[in-house]
Image 1 (tube, rainbow, N blue to C red):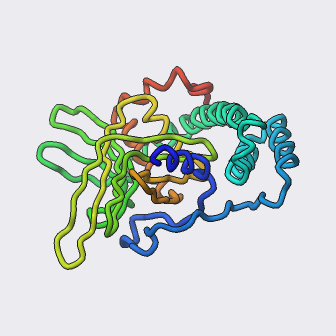
Image 2 (tube, rainbow, N blue to C red):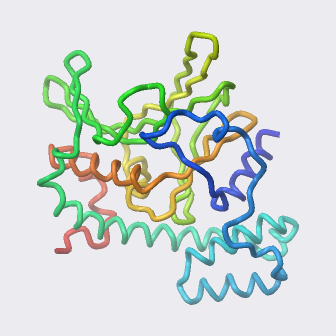
Length: 285
């Protein structure tokens, strides 16, 4: 059952459109509630699968990978019985490979732009202390733990060591029992995982909080965060043991993540150096 749910989530991951959390809104149990899977933004269900398959392969040949992957996702969702006969999983892997290459190139361009923004990066930060450690967050990020959140921050300890983090908080009246986070950036899937803490508020109405606060300490994690920051369409699924919730990442949230990455690098963060070899145009001016 668990594998089936995960498989269904993978199929529909890039078809969702929904209201996301942001720093200016209170947790909305109504908006967070489970809903039926919504239709894709563009409805391809009336196109015959053979014709849609031809469209998809044409998009691949024309290097139109985003729209091709969108149609491929729709074809897999609407006609799972054709996955093997049409070789749809193999085709999906080909699209994903090209989309990953595109994100690498976009990351290189973003790196050049980041260098231009860096001198003003600290102006976008709000800072506070916890013990001997200083925390730096974007000014638009939520100040209180009563709100859902999806943002990056970094810390500086007394020895001057910097550490980049990513935090995701989910709030509802029922436990989701989150196991990981599946994030689609411009039709390409990424995964974030780590230790998820669970707390419950006191009072008449008890709210369940599930929170990931993970260090961004590997090149793969950093690539995921950079992809989120620089993506056009970003959708996140919070995947529980038997269910999931969906969130759209807003432009404001993406900008806040970019601001933190800028400031972290400006202050001397070292994780970026690990990725330079993967940039195709990192030193372009």
